[in-house]
Image 1: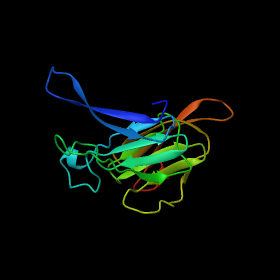
Image 2: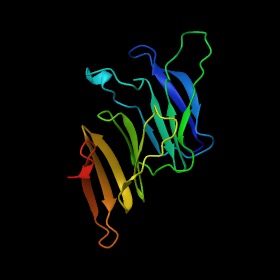
Image 3: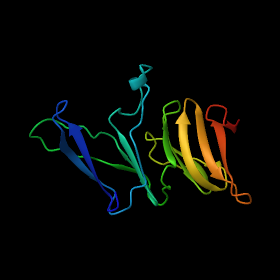
Image 4: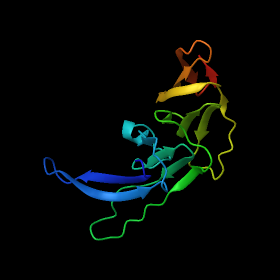
Length: 169
């Protein structure tokens, strides 16, 4: 993690151990989050627009999407393309989540919550404004749960943001 290299292993057979699968890179950046999105397909709902074998990775200054990280077969060359969703901003550890209800990758930064759509070339969506030091982010159903440290009291408060109605509940 510290050097930005990610090594993915796969289970060979039960009780047989692991085999090195592939290496991915965030170009010498400290990795802060790895998210394997739980898709609607894996929940037996309608077909998703995201590959169920995808991976999102963040560092302090970058957000990256790897569309597919499974092997192409024995003896073949594996090429792991990556799509940089944000090349200037990333997030702290624990401040990233994938929302299967809106099919967007979400990150929490001090100035707000940012939503990334992998199907858009440019992700210039206005962030959800929520000032404060973020301690964590989780996506459950249509809600984002955001843990923020209150500036004056230094208490951590948790907010539930309804992604469909676009408001804090």
